[in-house]
Length: 120
Figure 1 (tube, helix red, strand yellow):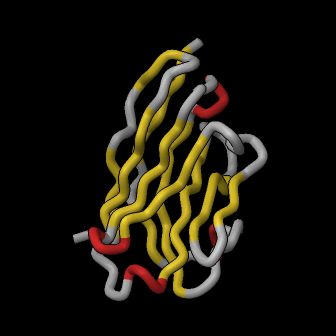
Figure 2 (tube, rainbow, N blue to C red):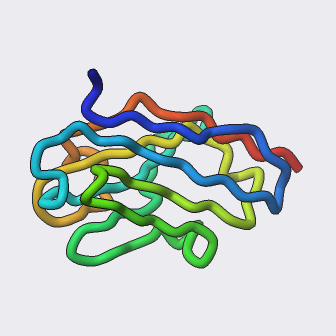
């Protein structure tokens, strides 16, 4: 069983909404910072949002995306509104002990990714 498993990816029209979910099988989930990253075709993996002692968002998604977590259920979610074609990517959830970070290299646990495609 994977440590993290994403779901909810789909193809949508621009302006649409999607909710991604991530189920975690990590012990002491509540003590971990959790994050969403994405990788667009031909590009590096980029930070989207994290939730730990604080919540941060990439400027490109601020005001449109919301990260949330349910520690009792070991779940993480990403609500995505007003989707744009440039949001098209494989989305990954990630976790690390301690504080959140915008660097993917600091995260120990990763899911396999879920595809989000936004058409104009």
